Image (cartoon, rainbow, N blue to C red; front, top):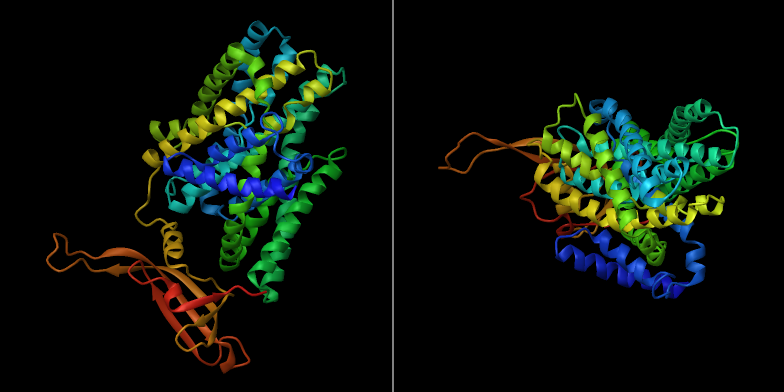
Length: 494
């Protein structure tokens, strides 16, 4: 298993680098590494690693969904709330209907089996979509209209809706006396309970972190631990009450961001570093689940079913955005962002076969083929369209993130050491402000322009026993300043 882990790290990083060099999403390279190294191709991934693959992929998904929660601002959610709810269900329904229309003839299955296949194919992949949306948010792309926030939220709700439909159709096939209305009623219940079980521990963690001066690594580890417990709670309760635990994971980050932005920033930065490793695990292990030989059996007919389903889905997505302030290019970007499939298809694609569905093997083949076709195409499309279509607001709050990354600035609660005096200081205040920068003398435009700046105030711990009393230092940092590391060192202690 240790060798398999080394293989994931070395070849995953190598593939990420190579694909980034040719301007393609690195996750495609990681997926390819997983396919080649998995048990269905070269079989150099140890059985022990494949046994724990599901848990590792879940933990990696928790990391990226926590990061997503720490990026969800209330004002952005308000702008896209209605569209988020509609996009979480309408495109999936359209895709299921499209598959039901053509699958019986092309794949020789019943309409109910086609509905089961459609419900598997209709799930968008948060593993592919969420990291790309967070990357756009980090760059400040689409911030004015909240498009990445819309897709991030809708894609998470989409999975809840689709999995419930899949359960209904599979139950109907097995002859269960399933009450469809009750099952559909589980969707809002699952969403509400998921959000509640995230908000409650999120508020508790906020209180804990503001009362006790814990170091950033401890805070991040505790948040991760609570998030993992939430996913376990969903498994425990699934026979009694539905809980959308992944929404709860996002709610943890959201409530901490609402209550204490400095604390949220610190945890988010640590999760960003943790994601470097989690991303490798997620995409390489998702790739390892792909059985190329099974996908080959789906052939041209399976490809045609997937394509027609995507056409119906695209129409549903476009209609879902009716009445929004998006122009046709931005709506097209949303359509493309709803193409990738991977996580859910890999997780539930084999369940119909295990349940004794006659066309179970065909359903599995088409599900696997959908990952191979849509994950890379969708990821490439998202990157290309996003860079060309999404706005970059002049006074975007995300410009502060670019500034922080360039200068490697600390957050409130972190301790730093002066390289000049060797003294230890603690960051006790930070503000994001816009400063006027006059145009260069003799320039065509003498009007000042607004530039982002981060204000930091430091407290010398040894000068007083009470925080904020004694000697303090204050600085404004802008893009023109040298890197923070030239004069200071951040102390990442516990």
